[in-house]
Length: 130
Image (cartoon, rainbow, N blue to C red; front, side, top):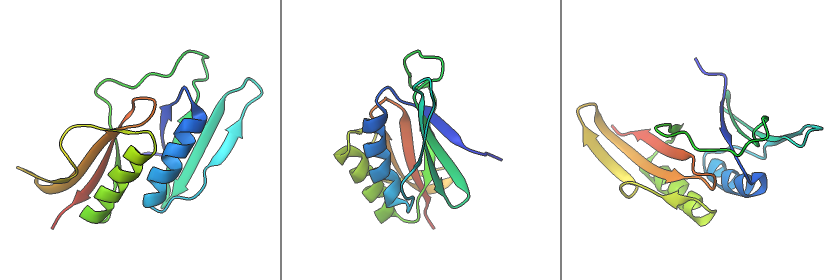
């Protein structure tokens, strides 16, 4: 259904440091860097047929986080959820909501973590338990 997800950044180098560490937990390698003549810089992370991108806005305006928007990354275990969260916080992210761990609801038990990247984008790690 999705070809890619892209978030904006006002500091592409801080975002690169952050996402290199966070997405490295999931197995993604170095991003492909695309620099345009107008100064726009985009980072493309490829992993398991998915693309996650970070870009300075092409309209020249400041990047803003989408209110109500969340980008979710699939994780393999509760341990990976915790490692993802720890990598995020250690590399300029901010922990938000409840601590990483299981949450039970009417759709079952989910292992979750939530954090914001250096530009304020809300990110989630999700593992469907049992």
